[in-house]
Length: 258
Image (cartoon, rainbow, N blue to C red; front, side):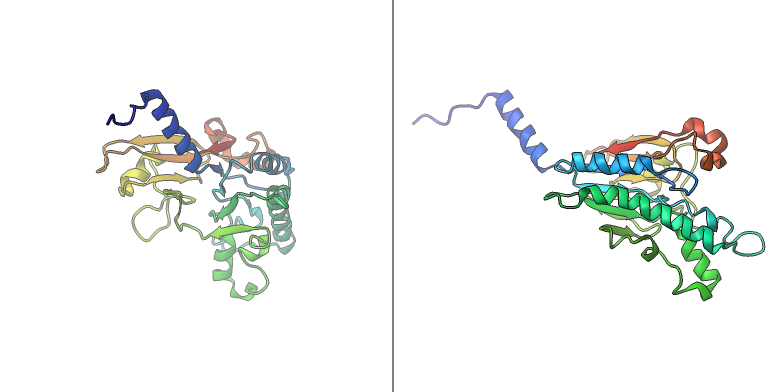
């Protein structure tokens, strides 16, 4: 009896490609966006509309941290003590909540919606540091509750905690070895992250606002792994971000589709 007819190579290859596309996950990564009361939130409205338009394709939307600028807490832990202006604090919170609403509200009522992740950055972590220095504010302010993350459908990832989604590790930044929560640095943090964390996992972080990509070959199972710094998601000409100075020429503003 004759065996099965050999399948043309191209047909088999195309079928395997279709099977891969059917099971893959799409991650939409949002770099540091720094919602600030002095700047409009138009970019978050555009982001929400984009996610809603592509909701059937996107599995996860991941904010890499520092979505809230929290300029009112810039002086926490510096100089002679925390600088805390309650009125400015709630302005910072309101503009961040508005930004989150503009992302989440277009997804309401959709049958298929991506999972929303909000990684805590060092700017949001200022709230925790204030409470450590001034316990009297506990019960009055707090993160993540002030930003209504749970109510708006976002899963909170605490500062410097790693979350793995679809085999990719995400964190606001990768911590240098030791007690200090300083980020791995050097000329190319994306390369340093893979060298400091040699566990064969691809990694994505934010924090520096620069877009970087580094690929490392030769892992034990012959795979290539990548490290990405996600850039930023705001107008580099915005007046409220003038603290960046010459870094503005190294920024990349936009989204990452992984």
